[in-house]
Image (cartoon, rainbow, N blue to C red; front, side, top):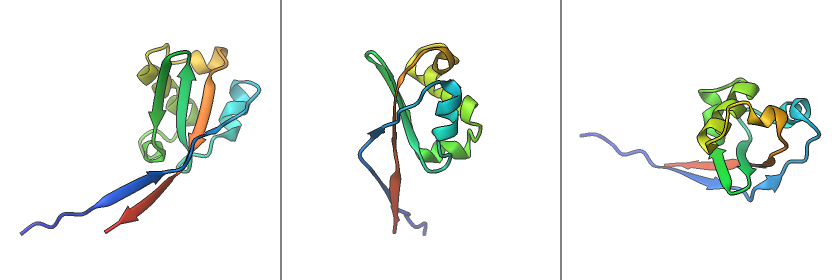
Amino acid sequence: MSQIEVEVSRLTVPQRLEYRDADDLLAKLNPNVDGVILQDGWRRATFLPQVWEKIPDKAEFLDELCYKMGVAANTWKHKHLDVLIYQVEEFHE
């Protein structure tokens, strides 16, 4: 008989991340800690902190998040986007 494992993730309230440029944005991200929301006008996408396990490189992480948002992968490098970060509290059974 197989067992069911339950995991619940509670997201904290997203906080705006202020940054000057692409290098500053990279410096302020905390892999494996921060979930990231990118927003450009009405376009918006997020990756949970767990995504860092599959995409540990900060630049690649943002490239993929831009792609998910429906814009060119390198948009974060040359356009100032709205960036919000949040954390996840995990509960396991």
